[in-house]
Length: 439
Ligand code: NAD
Image 1 (cartoon, rainbow, N blue to C red):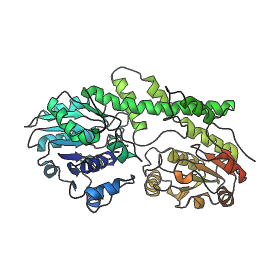
Image 2 (cartoon, rainbow, N blue to C red; image 1 turned 90 degrees about the vertical axis):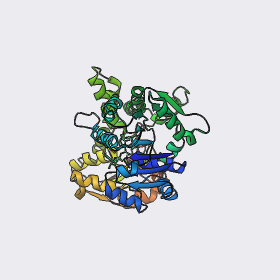
Image 3 (cartoon, rainbow, N blue to C red; image 1 turned 60 degrees about the horizontal axis):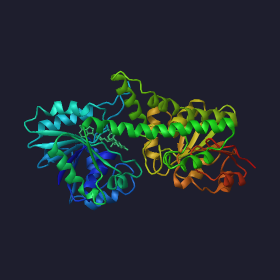
Image 4 (tube, helix red, strand yellow; image 1 turned 30 degrees about the vertical axis):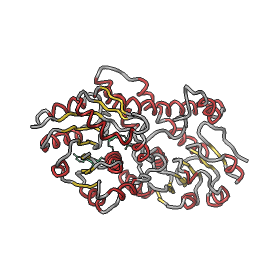
């Protein structure tokens, strides 16, 4: 099938490459010309495992890039919108990019088509977009098809989705989407059809539920800290209950990234607009502030005033296997402790560039040294914090770590290290919701 995708970010590019790999003819469009030029030269502008191979394999036979929407839409029966929906000042989703893209598609359409909203948008957006495209000379059916992929595993998630939610009242549009997604449905039909409004709500409900589990486990970890329990034991026994399961039961420094924080805030805002106070979502946001606050307090307790102290940080991305640092807990922690006078030596397998840009925008670049080698980052540190659970950090050479560091405190912000290995090297181990261990 011939499709166009407007917006070539994490979602648009992954979707484009996967649809192309499944046999469709895809043109990915973006207003960012530099991004398009880099893609045309074969460079994926962000790190996502497997994506560059997929792009190279399909480009240019079935996958092409353009900043000319009119040309890209030529002969296409489906146009996806996968542009950003960043948070506005009041927490609501900023729909300006989505609405601008919809206006462009409506104006440039030369035949009937399905306009598919893949961006995460609040309930009622399909209606707004439908009102815009009613002005077109052609019939444009607006379909809500939220995306559930997760960064770090995005290609796999897109190729093998748990479900494909299609919100539309238009039978022909549904038929088109069914044909497009058929290659991903061979094992079983993953398509779930519903109204556009329900489809819009599903996406926020899914993210809010997952974020709530994280916040809940972080709260249980705080309880373990206060009562001298061990959250690892609690987690293992909790997850064994098949009604609960093990996914998203890991306490840590809180959730970050481009989705959970912004989607929770937007959900709360949507509730307010409808006269509702969504207390669970609101609490998940508030509880998410605690882990970084607690860690800052623990650092001060262990080291004394942070002014002049050196803190090593392993991991800057908001989670492993991505270079995305949007709302990353590591950067929140760095900002807090730097403002208290600490200096940072930080490392990350993929996110040094994106973190550098973020630190410059915060004016903190002079206080943070970004280093490729994690042991370099630990050198001369009074304390080391593991802030992202990259597999590279799971089993460090603890003796080497001990020799590199000036102090002895290791804060495992993701409960990813083996405490015994750390303690045997003469270091002090502190996890999240776990007893302090030392020799
Ligand atoms: P992104 O910021 O990585 O990419 C968005 C792209 O859209 C940018 O390249 C931008 O230049 C382009 N763009 C903006 N306006 C445009 C226009 N009018 N025409 C053409 N291009 C335009 O964003 P993303 O992370 O891919 O997210 C896109 C949407 O998908 C958001 O609504 C997000 O909430 C949702 N989503 C994201 C993820 C994720 O893990 N990143 C997962 C599921 C859903």
